[in-house]
Image (cartoon, rainbow, N blue to C red; front, side, top):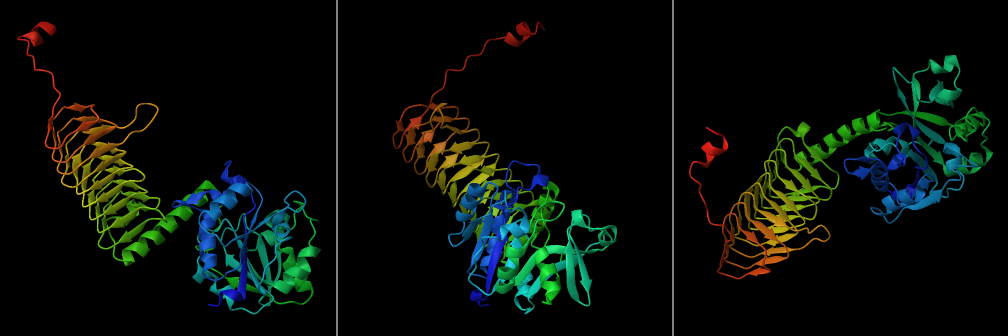
Length: 433
């Protein structure tokens, strides 16, 4: 569609007290991204003029948005003198003749769900849905197929509270309507706030057309509590996993898998049950086995797990990482690490085998140090590599060895063991048997 037809304003100034958190509501995350991210992502598909209204923790909100998008306008609401949704629109300036107003706490909105607002020529289009239990929502009074008025629950009469048609919170206005009625808003109500919904009443009184648009609850679901957040995350998880399965990723028991928004897959990939893949991880032609965790890492032509953990900034290529292996900020190419190892702040080259119980001792309590392991190195079980250390190509590290020297030269065997002693009949003496 023509993105120049419509401007979008996203209201993101509220505190979200029902979240019971010190964090601004719109900064709470769903599948690894702030709620506000998803609304802006959908908005950019249909508009090139997007304004976000901020107030509470405005610097944090602006910083979060700017980390993903560089073409967003920000307006700060004077929430002391002009609180409420109407007050949020006081200083907003848009460039297009139609204005879609969205809420920053509706992360499940998608561009397709907004289509009905774009092809309706009424002066005002407002979203509605019918709920058996409308508690918490503003009620919409409809007469003769048009909206007569909207009443906030806290201001509604008993008769109005019995209405089950509720305000879904999304509106499309002509710019002319906003320019005329926003300056006329009053805070003469129970909460002493300026309501955007009062524009509906004033427009109706002047004979303008106000069309209700029935929308589905899933896409227009608001997030007001941690419970709402969890429900929205389940829906978003289903969308993310469905997208990747349709693109060819094989998922076993997908309901048990967690995949974040920033994760990408390429080629033939399998993800087994119970896996968690987060951040900007990239999985390419790889097999992620059951109950493995991958954080902000790249896995190419490799298999990981079961029960393995790749911490951020790890890169695996042509590598096998098995049970209970943890990798952190390391690059492994053509490596086998079958089980029970920790590889941190390391570079390990092709043909190398990491035995069971091997750890890179990368931290001295103050600083982190690098371990560099070359090609075709055999690191025996239960060895410790105390960084900074370099193991050159074609080296054998004997089982149980602690490597503390700065370098083990190519072709060498490194071994550090005490001679085995046996004391005859010690068991019987110790236990007095």
